[in-house]
Amino acid sequence: ALDSDLAGRHVVVSAGGTREAIDPVRFIGNRSSGLQGYALAATAVARGASVTLVSANVALPDPAGAKVVRVGSARELREAVLAGRAGADVVVMAAAVADFRPDAAAASKIKKSGAAPGPISLTENPDILLELGRERAHAGQVIVGFAAETDNVLEHGRAKLARKGCDLLVVNQVGGGRAFGTADNQAVVLGADGTATEIAHGPKEDLADRVWDLVGERLAS
Ligand code: C5P
Image (cartoon, rainbow, N blue to C red; front, side, top):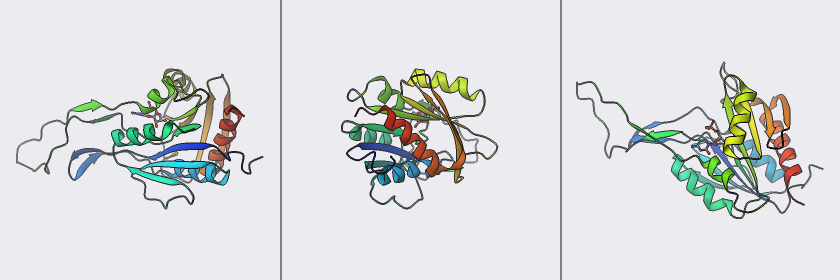
């Protein structure tokens, strides 16, 4: 059933982590490697989908057969995802999007002055998943989010799924060296229909395939 079950489907996957400029050489970033998003893109290609991979600051080879769009910041990632969503049957937000960015990036490198530096004032970034989930580009579009939680994983996951309005939320427990930058992952996938599917610890490709299985069940035939 895996072979080509996504043939004729167009999917958009975001991967990696955004960088929010402080000045031309410095940024606020996060520890996302992009491995899970790239595994989702590669497995979707293998199952016959047409794949647009929106990649934020990832040091991995392009997955063969995917269209890769490179972005830096959360606002760039939003533009790329929104540009791709109209024709997409599925959007998977695997990227770690910065919740905040510096109010304004300095035009030139901030220098040491001898005095204590001032604080960096932050502005909230748009929540892309919320935007996708609250208003579908077309009926039947399947929206998938990711959530990294350190505690009360299921409870926080359920609340996030409801708030963001997505169809599926892949919830990882993080901290203590789990998930970030490692080849393996483990998760619970929560469905808007109340389902909870545990995915045993294993390669990120296996988790990706299980996610596509759950997406496939939700795609109109
Ligand atoms: O709210 P939180 O950051 O935990 O939610 C994680 C999910 O929301 C991920 O799917 C991530 O890609 C997405 N997200 C987003 N825009 C943001 C923050 C998170 O799309 N500004």
